[in-house]
Image (cartoon, rainbow, N blue to C red; front, side):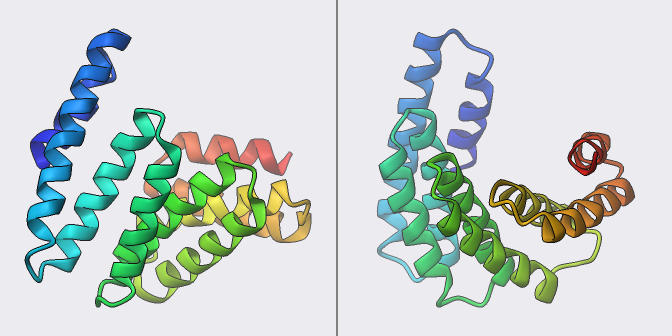
Length: 176
Protein backbone atom coordinates (compact mmCIF):
# COMPACT_ATOMS: atom_id res chain seq x y z
CA UNK A 1 0.00 0.00 0.00
CA UNK A 2 2.81 2.38 0.87
CA UNK A 3 4.62 1.86 -2.43
CA UNK A 4 1.40 2.37 -4.42
CA UNK A 5 0.73 5.60 -2.51
CA UNK A 6 4.31 6.79 -3.04
CA UNK A 7 4.06 6.03 -6.77
CA UNK A 8 0.79 7.98 -6.95
CA UNK A 9 2.44 11.00 -5.34
CA UNK A 10 5.49 10.75 -7.59
CA UNK A 11 3.24 10.58 -10.66
CA UNK A 12 2.13 14.19 -10.18
CA UNK A 13 5.35 15.36 -11.82
CA UNK A 14 5.01 13.08 -14.87
CA UNK A 15 3.46 13.78 -18.27
CA UNK A 16 -0.21 12.82 -18.49
CA UNK A 17 0.29 9.48 -20.27
CA UNK A 18 2.96 8.30 -17.86
CA UNK A 19 0.97 9.58 -14.92
CA UNK A 20 -2.06 7.55 -15.97
CA UNK A 21 0.02 4.38 -16.30
CA UNK A 22 1.45 4.86 -12.80
CA UNK A 23 -2.03 5.55 -11.40
CA UNK A 24 -3.43 2.43 -13.04
CA UNK A 25 -0.59 0.39 -11.55
CA UNK A 26 -1.28 1.93 -8.13
CA UNK A 27 -4.97 1.05 -8.59
CA UNK A 28 -4.08 -2.56 -9.30
CA UNK A 29 -1.80 -2.79 -6.27
CA UNK A 30 -4.38 -1.20 -3.95
CA UNK A 31 -7.20 -3.39 -5.29
CA UNK A 32 -5.04 -6.43 -4.53
CA UNK A 33 -4.27 -5.13 -1.03
CA UNK A 34 -7.97 -4.52 -0.37
CA UNK A 35 -8.89 -7.98 -1.65
CA UNK A 36 -6.33 -9.61 0.63
CA UNK A 37 -7.44 -7.53 3.61
CA UNK A 38 -11.08 -8.49 3.13
CA UNK A 39 -10.14 -12.00 4.30
CA UNK A 40 -8.71 -10.70 7.59
CA UNK A 41 -10.05 -8.94 10.65
CA UNK A 42 -7.97 -5.84 9.86
CA UNK A 43 -10.88 -3.44 9.37
CA UNK A 44 -8.79 -0.31 10.04
CA UNK A 45 -6.16 -1.33 7.52
CA UNK A 46 -8.82 -2.26 4.96
CA UNK A 47 -10.54 1.11 5.47
CA UNK A 48 -7.17 2.79 4.88
CA UNK A 49 -6.60 0.78 1.69
CA UNK A 50 -10.07 1.76 0.45
CA UNK A 51 -9.28 5.40 1.24
CA UNK A 52 -6.04 5.28 -0.74
CA UNK A 53 -7.78 3.51 -3.60
CA UNK A 54 -10.51 6.18 -3.59
CA UNK A 55 -7.83 8.86 -4.10
CA UNK A 56 -6.39 6.90 -7.02
CA UNK A 57 -9.82 6.42 -8.56
CA UNK A 58 -10.47 10.13 -8.22
CA UNK A 59 -7.14 10.80 -9.94
CA UNK A 60 -8.25 8.55 -12.79
CA UNK A 61 -11.52 10.44 -13.14
CA UNK A 62 -13.65 7.75 -11.53
CA UNK A 63 -15.65 9.89 -9.07
CA UNK A 64 -18.46 7.40 -8.58
CA UNK A 65 -16.03 4.61 -7.74
CA UNK A 66 -14.17 6.91 -5.34
CA UNK A 67 -17.48 7.73 -3.63
CA UNK A 68 -18.34 4.02 -3.28
CA UNK A 69 -14.95 3.33 -1.72
CA UNK A 70 -15.15 6.23 0.74
CA UNK A 71 -18.69 5.24 1.72
CA UNK A 72 -17.52 1.68 2.33
CA UNK A 73 -14.58 2.91 4.40
CA UNK A 74 -16.87 5.19 6.45
CA UNK A 75 -19.34 2.37 7.07
CA UNK A 76 -16.51 0.09 8.13
CA UNK A 77 -15.00 2.69 10.45
CA UNK A 78 -18.32 3.26 12.21
CA UNK A 79 -17.81 -0.21 13.68
CA UNK A 80 -14.24 0.48 14.79
CA UNK A 81 -12.80 2.42 17.67
CA UNK A 82 -10.87 5.03 15.70
CA UNK A 83 -12.98 8.19 15.51
CA UNK A 84 -10.18 10.28 13.99
CA UNK A 85 -9.87 7.91 11.03
CA UNK A 86 -13.63 8.12 10.60
CA UNK A 87 -13.43 11.92 10.71
CA UNK A 88 -10.68 11.92 8.08
CA UNK A 89 -12.70 9.76 5.68
CA UNK A 90 -15.84 11.85 6.29
CA UNK A 91 -13.88 14.99 5.33
CA UNK A 92 -12.90 13.42 2.03
CA UNK A 93 -16.44 12.28 1.35
CA UNK A 94 -17.54 15.84 2.10
CA UNK A 95 -14.97 17.18 -0.35
CA UNK A 96 -16.34 14.91 -3.04
CA UNK A 97 -19.90 16.03 -2.28
CA UNK A 98 -18.86 19.68 -2.34
CA UNK A 99 -17.11 19.20 -5.68
CA UNK A 100 -20.38 17.83 -7.04
CA UNK A 101 -22.30 20.84 -5.65
CA UNK A 102 -24.17 18.67 -3.15
CA UNK A 103 -23.79 21.26 -0.43
CA UNK A 104 -26.22 19.88 2.16
CA UNK A 105 -24.65 16.42 1.99
CA UNK A 106 -21.17 17.93 2.21
CA UNK A 107 -22.23 20.05 5.19
CA UNK A 108 -23.49 16.95 7.02
CA UNK A 109 -20.20 15.10 6.47
CA UNK A 110 -18.13 18.12 7.53
CA UNK A 111 -20.27 18.69 10.64
CA UNK A 112 -19.85 15.08 11.74
CA UNK A 113 -16.11 15.14 11.05
CA UNK A 114 -15.70 18.40 12.97
CA UNK A 115 -17.60 17.00 15.94
CA UNK A 116 -15.38 13.89 15.96
CA UNK A 117 -12.19 15.97 15.76
CA UNK A 118 -13.39 18.28 18.55
CA UNK A 119 -14.32 15.34 20.77
CA UNK A 120 -11.38 13.03 20.12
CA UNK A 121 -8.56 15.07 18.58
CA UNK A 122 -5.87 17.34 19.90
CA UNK A 123 -6.46 21.08 19.89
CA UNK A 124 -3.47 21.76 17.64
CA UNK A 125 -4.00 18.89 15.24
CA UNK A 126 -3.89 19.71 11.51
CA UNK A 127 -6.91 17.46 10.95
CA UNK A 128 -9.00 19.64 13.24
CA UNK A 129 -7.81 22.82 11.52
CA UNK A 130 -8.68 21.31 8.14
CA UNK A 131 -12.13 20.25 9.37
CA UNK A 132 -12.79 23.77 10.65
CA UNK A 133 -11.68 25.17 7.27
CA UNK A 134 -13.95 22.84 5.33
CA UNK A 135 -16.88 23.66 7.62
CA UNK A 136 -16.17 27.36 7.06
CA UNK A 137 -16.07 26.83 3.30
CA UNK A 138 -19.42 25.07 3.25
CA UNK A 139 -21.06 27.63 5.55
CA UNK A 140 -19.74 30.38 3.25
CA UNK A 141 -21.10 28.55 0.21
CA UNK A 142 -24.49 28.09 1.89
CA UNK A 143 -24.65 31.80 2.78
CA UNK A 144 -24.60 31.14 6.52
CA UNK A 145 -22.29 34.10 7.09
CA UNK A 146 -22.39 34.39 10.88
CA UNK A 147 -21.41 30.74 11.35
CA UNK A 148 -18.91 30.97 8.50
CA UNK A 149 -17.24 34.01 10.11
CA UNK A 150 -16.83 32.23 13.46
CA UNK A 151 -15.36 29.19 11.73
CA UNK A 152 -12.98 31.30 9.60
CA UNK A 153 -11.76 33.05 12.76
CA UNK A 154 -11.17 29.67 14.37
CA UNK A 155 -9.46 28.30 11.27
CA UNK A 156 -7.20 31.36 11.14
CA UNK A 157 -6.23 30.87 14.78
CA UNK A 158 -5.60 27.14 14.41
CA UNK A 159 -3.54 27.50 11.23
CA UNK A 160 -1.58 30.33 12.85
CA UNK A 161 -0.67 28.13 15.84
CA UNK A 162 0.36 25.35 13.45
CA UNK A 163 2.51 27.72 11.38
CA UNK A 164 0.50 27.09 8.21
CA UNK A 165 0.65 30.49 6.56
CA UNK A 166 -1.50 29.55 3.56
CA UNK A 167 -4.36 28.72 5.91
CA UNK A 168 -4.05 32.06 7.68
CA UNK A 169 -4.01 33.93 4.36
CA UNK A 170 -7.06 32.04 3.08
CA UNK A 171 -8.99 32.70 6.29
CA UNK A 172 -8.09 36.41 6.14
CA UNK A 173 -9.31 36.57 2.53
CA UNK A 174 -12.66 35.07 3.48
CA UNK A 175 -12.98 37.27 6.54
CA UNK A 176 -12.48 40.37 4.37
